Length: 79
Image (tube, rainbow, N blue to C red; front, side):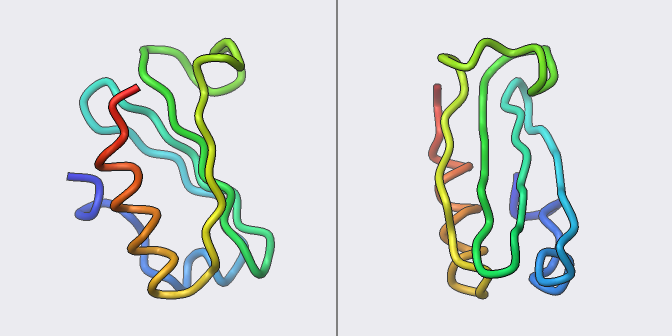
């Protein structure tokens, strides 16, 4: 599950980008201080070569609740 590999909040508070995958779901998190932009897509390719129309994104606050909402959103995403 995604929750098992997602870094703790401090990782994002420090401004670190995180990418991961679960089965054929790929995702990447870009924190900017107050928010985390999360992009998710289905497929075998990295974000940079995946067609934009196949990528979904959402923004979450850099809080414990925001981290959990992001995990829930990623786990529910089915493409």
